[in-house]
Amino acid sequence: MKIKEVTIHHLKMRLKNPFSTSFGTIDNKEFLLLEAKDEQGTVGWGESVAFEAPWYTEETMKTTWHMLEDFLIPLVINKELQHPDELGELFKGIRKNYMAKSAIEGALWDIYAQQTNQSLAEALGGKKDKIEVGISIGIQKTMEKQIEVVNQAIKDGYKRIKLKIKPGWDFNVLRTLREHFPEVPMMADANSAYTLEDVALLQQLDEFNLMMIEQPLAYDDLIDHATLQKQLKTPICLDESICSLEDAKKAIELGSCGVINIKIGRVGGISEAVKIHDYCAEKGIPVWCGGMLEAGIGRAHNIALTSLSNFVMPGDTAGSSHYWEQDIIEPEVVVEDGYIKVPKEVGIGYQPNLEAIKKYTVESKVYR
Ligand SMILES: O=C(O)CCC(=O)c1ccccc1C(=O)O
Ligand SMILES: [Mg+2]
Image 1 (cartoon, rainbow, N blue to C red):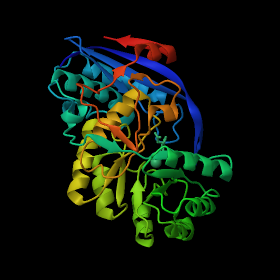
Image 2: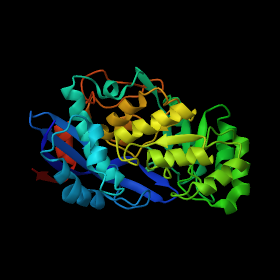
Image 3: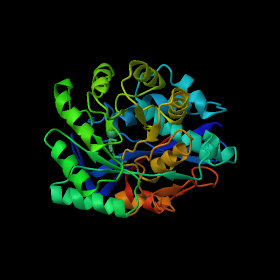
Image 4: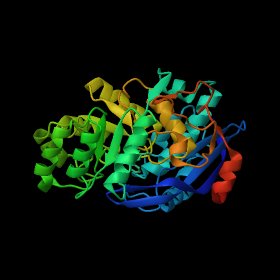
């Protein structure tokens, strides 16, 4: 494939329910959508998961735009490529900026799957027909509301409930939810809100039979997590701390976690995500697919990735209607009895809804 043209679309979509974490609240999601066209006219789509502010990782919508415009797109345009895996080598001279790299890589995977006449899941070696899904529930204004939202998610069939916690909204909240829902598979995500000073509190959470606790300590730490894991019964799941296969190797070697949440954007793309998946499978570390409040394109990529065999725990890939009044793909992603069917159609298996994309687009820019 040879890319002749890339368009960056800047979209703004209102979340149905504002999403609150230990860092703050998102109600409008602004992000970039990439549309790449190759010399045969095949079009592939990629979605950047960077937010407007650098609270989750250091990247933002504007830094990803800068990286794409000034470095990544010029490297890709007119390059003859056989396979998206080759982008790793092509981008080698550019440090980090994983979400920017991932956005264009996703579009190339889409083109590659179409040109080789297979679904993206198939192109990645995925074997599952359907994937199990969980849901990530933000911090609510009151305990009453928190119980109501969890109850609804269980009724909707989600296979696992993830709860956001932060200092002051942790032990009591989890205790109350456990009392109300004694059997439901539950976990907590702290988004780095604690330090080793909080070991005693984190140990108290062991009594709630959580599947795991996600990213309790610093976003860039592996050492303290290893220290903490030795003192907890609950497995630690790393999210922010794992940005590459190298990070995953070190975390496993150090004993920093028992589970890894793989996010395509955080690790620089689908190729690196597959490598981490394969390595974890070899080491007996279960993985699951995280979410970044994606719209349909990113969601479709997540679904294809989750069809790989070591994604053995429900991911955060909830259905389109959980997030949006109208998603940007057709059909939308539907969750039935806690499962999403992995599409068999060629490419990502969903069509971009060009009308919806146009409706949400703030500005677009074409690069040739
Ligand atoms: O529903 C989703 O897409 C996952 C929501 C979620 O937990 C999340 C959303 C935005 C940024 C970070 C995280 C996280 O997993 O930490
Ligand atoms: Mg997380």
